[in-house]
Image (cartoon, rainbow, N blue to C red):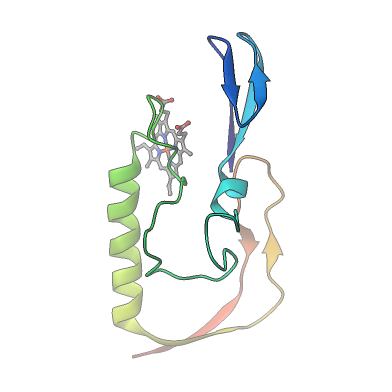
Length: 115
Ligand code: HEM
C-alpha cells in the first residue's frame, strides 16, 4: 500500500517543499483511490480506461521490477477462475488483514459453483 523513500535532493511538489534527507511516505493505495483523477474510485472496474493506476509505482527508477510477472500471474489466475467458476457468493464473515504494507484479507469465505 505504501513505500517510504528518502529524498536525495531538495524538491518542490504540489506546493510542498521536500528537503534532501526527508523521509517521504508514498501512499499508492491513496493515489489509486483519488477521486480527482479516477471517476468512481471505489467501484471495481477492470475495464477502466485509461488504466493509469500506480499500484506498481509511478514509473520512476524504483518501478516494480516484478510488475510484468505479477500481471501475467493475475491474468492466469483470473482466466482459470472465470473458466471454471460459475457463481460466487459470500459464505461467512470476511476478516481483514491488519498491516501497513499490504491490503488484503485473512479470511474471505465464499461459496462457489462450477460452470
Ligand atoms: C501484485 C503484485 C505486486 C505489486 C502490487 C507490487 C508493487 C510494488 C510497488 C508499489 C513498488 C514500488 C515502486 C516505486 O516506488 O516506484 C514495488 C517495487 C518492487 N517490486 Fe513489486 N509489486 C508486486 C509484485 C512483485 C513481484 C512478483 C516481484 C518480484 C518477482 C516484485 C519485486 C519488486 C522489487 C524488487 C521492487 C523494488 C524496485 C526498486 O526499488 O528499484 N514485485 N512493487
